[in-house]
View 1 (spheres, rainbow, N blue to C red):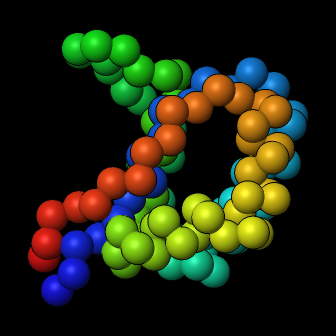
View 2 (view 1 turned 180 degrees about the vertical axis):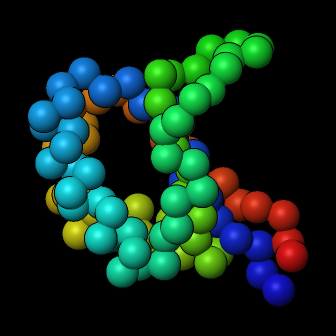
Length: 98
């Protein structure tokens, strides 16, 4: 079985109202494109190094699929609301093979 792919995002939301526009877009978009939330905010403790205030992890069926979804025209257009409302560290990661 192929390795899954993940979006791992550390984010500081600076404009909650504008970020809410992105959230209304991204939840159904990810569901339609095979993305599943593994972590969506919640309590976190930084025990080494640095982290942003919010951490999000989204699982995809494969690394290639995670990359395709991020690069899609639809996501690139929809994420503009996030770019203006937050600062993020965004990484696409391949998981271990199952």
